Length: 285
Image (cartoon, rainbow, N blue to C red; front, side, top):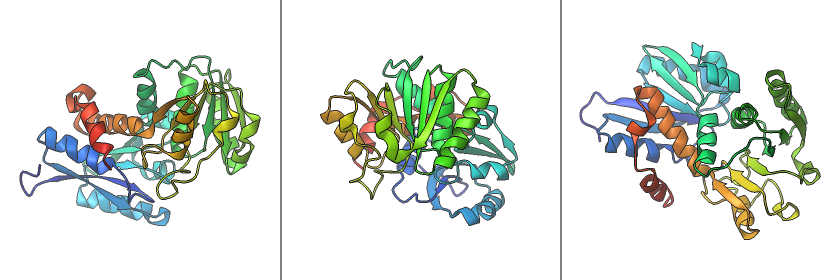
């Protein structure tokens, strides 16, 4: 709740951002913790990114989250990049300390936390990653770090997938890596998990799915990081086939809690304890 005129501003930047649930998450946490802050969204084109960041410093924006398509390109405009973010190759959270911008990444940690909550072990597992953008960079690298056996990256543009695979191989020379175009998904059926890191199936394109799950074994886990809609066409298909599914809203909430931890320098458990209530709230949007 706003307590006085001297309110602190936090925000999300990306393109598009009009259906983001992040303001609901952060403003709810601010209200419940009696923090005099507000969280808003700004739709920012790539060509305007540097100018916007300069204006944030002037306006004193305290911190912000970064979504597609800026998670990688923003790194060149920051004053400092946290070791984890640099290692994962993307930034999704920025803290402003007196005009000094520090970039962090909560994608990988938020993703892994959602697996740990379900007691899912990815050690020695073969994982199919759809997409090669900023979220894919963080998630793929984190999976390699956590002990996955093989990572297969499928992307609409093969060169972008190969670039990501090369970067991962440079950090983990013992992991098995393959990459291909997204339309060749039928070649990679012997896997343990699919992770959709593309925007395919995201509102308003809700009738689309990045792959046809009917040709896969129904013992796989299907994770879609898209959270609008909360239940994508990909997840609907997976449930009908009896596959275990994980919704992107889980990762989003974890990211939000971790961002607040970075901005306010306190433990995640001190931010907000009633995660289930927050998830129920988000299910109404």
